[in-house]
Length: 114
Length: 114
DNA sequence: CTCAAGTGATACCATTTGGTATCTCAATGC
DNA sequence: GCATTGAGATACCAAATGGTATCACTTGAG
Image (cartoon, each protein chain N blue to C red):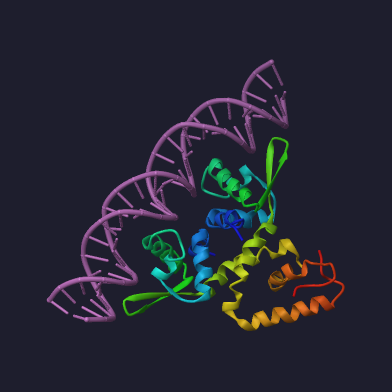
């Protein structure tokens, strides 16, 4: 498994970018709107948005002369799954529980997709 | 919510360090043993270990003149919980526990893993 | 004590990173 | 058409980062 998750972890490595993600979780914003929440220039925020976009964590859609940035939380999944490997070191009972639930989901015919 | 998770995310931001974590997940190792798995000097590996230790992701215990580095996966929890906030954007009906299972259940052809 | 092995610490280097300042381009509004 | 506003591109800078090389310290063995 190569580092397709590197752009994601790299994007998450900066507190400003993590903050931007939470911010965009509330509602999509233009660059100026995002920048209005931080004590830095729009150019700096733009750079962060590029990094976030590079990691697939946000989507950018043009709206007139503006660019609307919206959260794409799905891109967090690979990173979360990578971290999930370490679950085995936290609590082995959790692993057993997951196994039990997995069996339950195969038995349940009604709620597997979204 | 200050950035007590910054050291953790910072540590995870480097592929070598993520690799070291997986490595130490198998067994504790001295610096030399860890360095033996990478194409870089012990000093460079040591730096990575310092960053990992700074994030609390590894524990270091002296054993004679050696230093044994062991995984402390529990330190991943804050980061994982932070990411868990975004679960609401994936599928509000299910919580984080389902995430680890999902990769197994995405196969809807009628049979699951083996 | 003396020598070897493992680690820690420092100095140093090239690159990346986070940030600003500035300029140009595109779309909006009068 | 022309000024205004939002965004992109570039140049530039200071600091952090990843890495090497080197030296000092500590432990273990004769």
